[in-house]
Length: 200
Image (cartoon, rainbow, N blue to C red; front, side, top):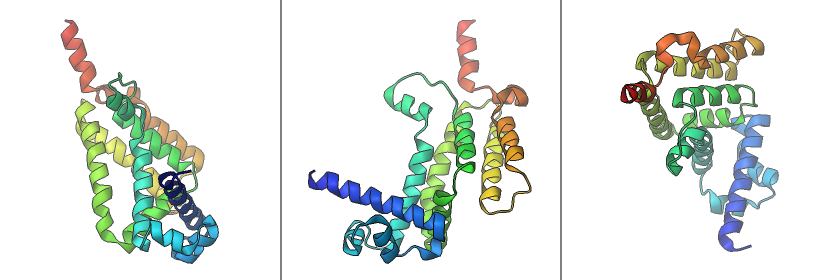
């Protein structure tokens, strides 16, 4: 194994260890010593990859961003292939998926933002990109953005233990948010409208 592959393997081990610590013990227990114990990487090795705790938190934030960016339509766009699902549906589906998982990554983001508020800029830029994709496709941009924000609210309220809904109720609401047919013409993509015009 060459140095680059070994370095990336160590980096991923540190990230996974940090996620495990936050999920199990909370963000307050995220220390270099704890990461070293959890990952099996020496403390020096951890600090070589991530010189400060902020660097660890930034990596966790980027890990989450990558999850939300790694959607089929974005991959299709990069590869020049046709897109099967719109940005709004994909983002709501991702938020729903996260709502069924341990909130380790989401807690990591909260920890990152509390520790270093300037990391909000990274999160804002990602949200801005997703919002632009959603607006570009939506016939009713305000309604599409409201659906997206509602899905985020469902996730965040559950994550912070403030949700009044059972898991089944939350799942039903996510399904409703994803169902374009329940939202009338607002769910149609602009690209579909343009396609109909070109066929006339």
